[in-house]
View 1 (cartoon, rainbow, N blue to C red):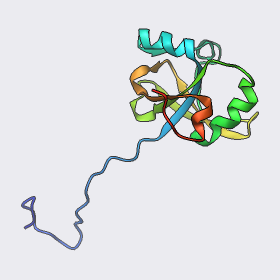
View 2 (view 1 turned 120 degrees about the vertical axis):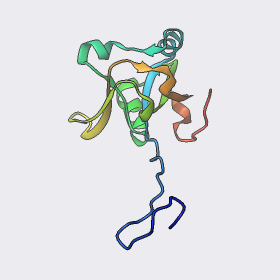
View 3 (view 1 turned 180 degrees about the vertical axis):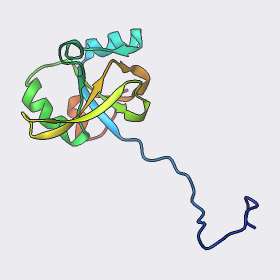
View 4 (view 1 turned 90 degrees about the vertical axis):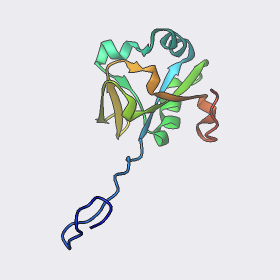
Length: 130
């Protein structure tokens, strides 16, 4: 017998349960919207009411999204979101305008799922701003 008291057999393999890596998704937000969310506990934006979800990106998509949709807008932050901490459904969907699959959160983002807040400029340096 091994440590669990059961005899080892050729057909029985011991495996160690490990938690899978937590995938992160990213959302570009107005700093004022993020500050408001920290007070309420939930991050919500107009696209949630208009389209039924909040647009997010994978890390390698953030710079392209910033360039295409945000131009010279100032006072932006990038929310780094631990997908397994989301209280709402996360769905990866094809975006024809970008010719890529993007993560969409179907409901408000609970602020405790946000593990890091960064400046758009920091996305290549990976330095958190707090």
